[in-house]
Length: 519
Image 1 (cartoon, one colour):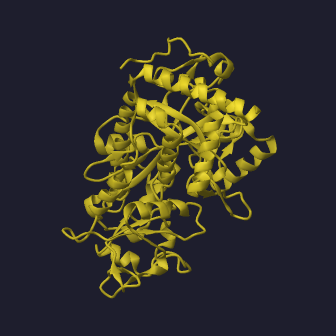
Image 2: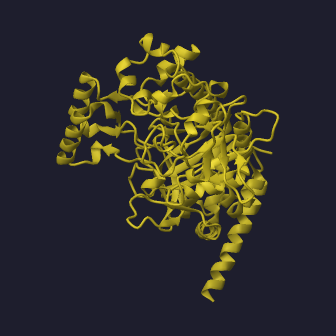
C-alpha cells in the first residue's frame, strides 16, 4: 500500500480532461492550482483517466435514482410535484485526520446546546449570569413556556442535530448554523452512498472510504435509550406531517430503516392515563418513542395551535408525564435561532469551560442598534438572514442585489430587527461538478448529522449540498440545489497499482463503447 501524493505524475488523459479546471478566487476541495490535493489525488486521477466514461457514470447514477424513486419537492414548484433527486457523481473528499477534529467540535457544540436548552426550561442561569441577554430569550419565537419544568431522559432535548459547515477562501471550516428542530437530509446522504457504491464500486474496493450506513442502527439505539419502559422492546414511531411534506421520502425511508411505525397525527391517540397509542389493524399499540418530523406548533392542538390538523390532542400531556419520549423534544428549537447562534461560542465556554473547537461565522444582530446601523450601511457586503426560517428561505445576498432591493431589505430590518441577522459573504469552497457534460467548479456546504446520547455519534462526512447554477451560493436542496456523496478517507491507505489497472481497464472499455456507437 502506497501513498498517492499530489506531486505524482498525472495519468495519460489528464491534460485533455482536467487541465482547464480552475476555481479562481475560491478554495477548491479537490484541486490546488491545477493539481489534486493530497487526500483527493487517487480519486482525481482515476476520474480524469475515465475521460468521457465519467459522463457514463453520471448517466448511470441518474438511472439508479429514477429506478429507486428518490425524490424531493422544490418549494418554488407551483404544482409541487416531486422531482428526481439532483445528484452529482463526483464525490467530495475530506481527509480522515481533518474529520476527526471536526467531529470533536460538533460533539462539543451539541453538548453545550443541550445544556443550554435544559437550563432555559429550568433555572435560566445563563440569563441570570448575563451570558444570554434577557431580551433575546423574551423575544424568542421558539421558546415554549409549556416545556418549563420538564426533564426529558438524560436531560437531553436535541437528540439529532444537523449543523451546516462551510469553508471560506483560506480553507477554514466554520459552523454556519445549527438545525435542532427537525433536521432533514440524512436519508439523501445514505442514498447518495448507495448510488456511488453502484457506479464507483471499483474505488470502494481500493480506497479507505469510511462508511455511513451504520447511521440507522445508531439512530435506533439512541431512540431506544429514551423509552419510558426500560427492559421492554421499545415501540418507535416516525411522526410525519404527511405525503405533501417536501421531505416525505425521508420520513418513509427512515421509518423503514428503523422498523418503526410511520404515523400521522390522526393515527395516534392519548388515553385518560396520558399514554400514546397507534391505531393498527390488530388494535391499538402503545408508542414509547416518537421521532417527530412535525414542528412544535402543530404537535398538539390542546397546547399550541388549536387549528392543527396534523397534531395529536394530548401528546404534550403524555410527554410531560414521562409516558412517551419525543425526539427532538418540544422546545428544542429555542437553540435553533440564528440570533442564539451568535452566542454559541460563549455557551460552550460557559457550560463546558472550553474554547470552541469549530468557529462561528462572524454575525451581526440587527436587534442591536449599533450593529443594525453597520448592517444597513454595508448591505452590499453582507448576507442577511431571517432568524428562524429554514431551507434557505428569505436569505438576502447583498452583493447580488440592486439598490432598490437593498433599500427594501433595510426597511424590513427596521420593521423587525430582532428577526434578522447578517454575516459577511463567504467565499464558499468549490468541488468539481459535472454540468452539461463538463467538469466545472460549484460551491458546496456540508450537513453532518450528530446524535446525542450515552455514546455521541457523528456521521462520517454528511450531506454535501451543491449550488448547481454557476456562481450561485444557494446550496439548499429545497431551493433547487443538488448533492454529492461525501467521502471521508485516509489518503495514506490506497493501492495505487490497483487504481491504475482499473482506470486503464475503464479507459479501454470507454474506447470500445465509443467505437460501437460509431458503428
